[in-house]
Amino acid sequence: MKTIEIKDKQRVEEIIARCSICYVGITDLEGNPYVIPMNFGYRDGVIYIHSGPTGSCLDMLEQNNRVCITFCSDTELVYQHEQVACSYRMKAQSVICRGSVGFIEDMDDKREALHILMRQYVEREFTYSDPAVRNVKIWEIPIDEVTAKDYAVPHQKPKIG
Image (cartoon, rainbow, N blue to C red; front, side):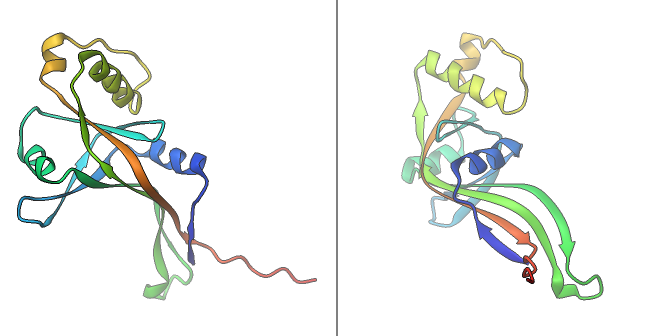
């Protein structure tokens, strides 16, 4: 089995659309990696995340706003030979994005970002009260770099003749 890089933007966006959470890598205040699962929304090369208005993640981002966000979908355990342990692989598709977090402060822009977030999970529209919008922190991460891979792809058998 092999790993294939995915370069097609539409396929990358399809993988992201199939995910229900993303894993956000941040650098903590001591310079160590810190990864948290989060809900998200995605549109036009930008990832949107929401959090409370205060907290350790926000303190970390104040010091270093660079993040790495990972998505993984369609996982399935596969093997080439049932009796050979090292032939087992996890078949999956992943997307890794890097970017810098900015925060949306404008109330209308925050509402639009909340719509994008909710559309990742449900089709209906919502309304958001002013207190709710004021008390949420909206992270906006334009993607600077993206890599995507398809893991455990079966080798093609050579065609004869």
